[in-house]
Image 1 (cartoon, rainbow, N blue to C red):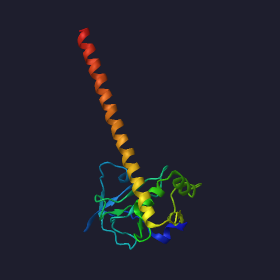
Image 2: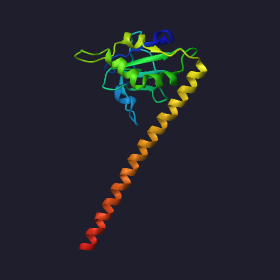
Image 3: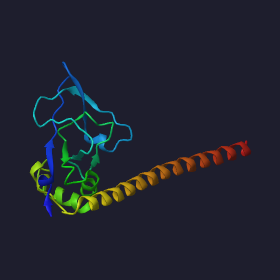
Length: 187
């Protein structure tokens, strides 16, 4: 096992300031799961821990009832994480970002991270708890394979959810059409 902090940097997000001179985009928790992201606009942060998001970065919610995490994609590149997120930047020579995301999204990982918030009035995963998280120490090639497998399962799950939504919409249309036809016959 290896601590996350040995193979990645973990940065806390920043609070967006009102735009005065240099507007930039900010990512919030809601943007981790949204089909259409509506990033917040604020002034460019000046603190050293504020890093613009780039390829390979992982964002994880610092609070919430379940683990929300996402691998940065093109829509997030250049934006900054807000205070309710942590930005994890894996060392690409030691840690595959898709593998890391797969481990973070495991129920047992989420339970462990949330356990560290027990008793807090405002449950928030501490940055140090996240940095100490133990990851399996396996070769990078194997990490990539596991990351690809996890990505395929997430895509399949998302496809099933979209299919279920469309199926429900089609069922509603059929029922409405049957009701309309019944009303026409009885008139």
